[in-house]
Every structure is written in structure tokens, then in C-alpha cells.
Amino acid sequence: MMTHETSFFRDKAPFETLARLIPDLLARRGVMKQLVIWSAACSTGQEPYSLAMLLHERFFSLLSSWRVRIIASDLSQIALGRAREGIYSELETARGLSPAMKTKYFRPLQGRWSVAQNCRGLIEFRQLNLTQPWPTMPACDFILLRNVLLYFDVPTRMAVLERMRRTLRPDGALFLGGAETMLGMDIGYERKIGTGCSYYVPLKR
Image (cartoon, rainbow, N blue to C red; front, top):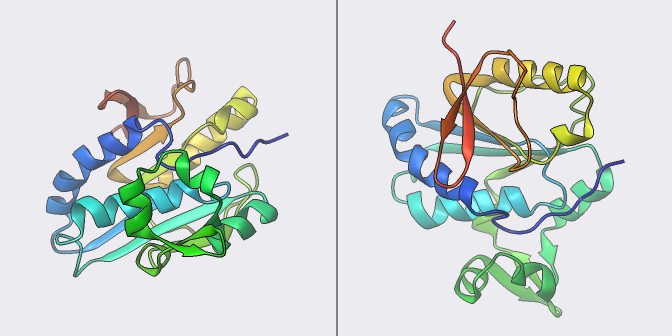
């Protein structure tokens, strides 16, 4: 049983940490000019759209000539359908968005709010079951796998995290939910302290 509880900029700290990490990563990718972020349990879309807003808000000028891909995946076709639609109620937009951000990145639509095209254009939606064989994934700079592992038993968690490690670039970073940990799982990550949260980087092998 999975839940689809989510909100825009949920927990805030991972997004602040990403904003701190991105400038150094962009400097390392100066020749490649490609940034790939995977929202690996995107639910109804608030997380990937928050990522798109973060990139527009803080890094628009730096990324203007880059290929930016936000891959948003989920097990549920129903949740993905809502995410692709990108239309949210007044209550949903009030959860995590300031009035200024809502006005800037959404358009009013028959009493609801539709995500602006400049954010939609960065996101690719895919159905994906993390516990089954994955389709081919691009090498990712950042992966957000938040509030998912707690639904899995330990062997499944370890298998998913190992596949995530192989999908991350060697200098990439993985974000888990605030209540999730890799404690006791020796699977090739090092824990780092971010801005109000932890994140994980692949160990050099």
C-alpha cells in the first residue's frame, strides 16, 4: 500500500541543499552542459514541478544554454495522470507555495491553477516500478527517492539503493526522506550533511 501525500517544496531542506550543491556541479559540467535530476516517486507531480521552479528561480541564466531533464516516475498511473495534467486546486497550491511563486509559475484555469509551460517543458513523466526491472535510465546528477524506502523490506531497500548508485554519476547525490536512513546497509554510499538534511554520495570504487 503506497500513499501519495505530497506538497510543493515538501520539507524545504532538500531543496535548499540542492540549491547549494548545484553551482559546483554546473562548474564540473561546463563542457557537457547537461543536468539530469530524477524524482523517483513523483506522486501527483508537486516534487518535479518544485524542482523546475527551483531551477528557473535560482539558475535560469546559468542554464539557458543547457539541456535540463527532470525525469519524474511513479508506480501509479492515476498519480502520473494528475502529474502530467499539472493542474492543482487552491488548497494544493497553498501547501508550499508563496503567493508570488504561484503567480509567477502558474496560470489560473477555471478556479484552479495550471503549471506554466516553462516548468512543464523540463519534465519527462514515466511509469516505473522501483522493485521490478527498470527501463534504461540516463546517468543522473541528483536523485530524489523520498519517503519510499519505508514501504519496502530491507532486502528490497538494499536492491533499490544499489541500482540507484549505479544510476548516479560518480559525483552525484541521492536524497532520501527525513525519516529514512541507510544505517546498517553497506551498499556503497557516504552520508553528507546538507542544509537541514542529509544526502548520500556514491563511494569511490
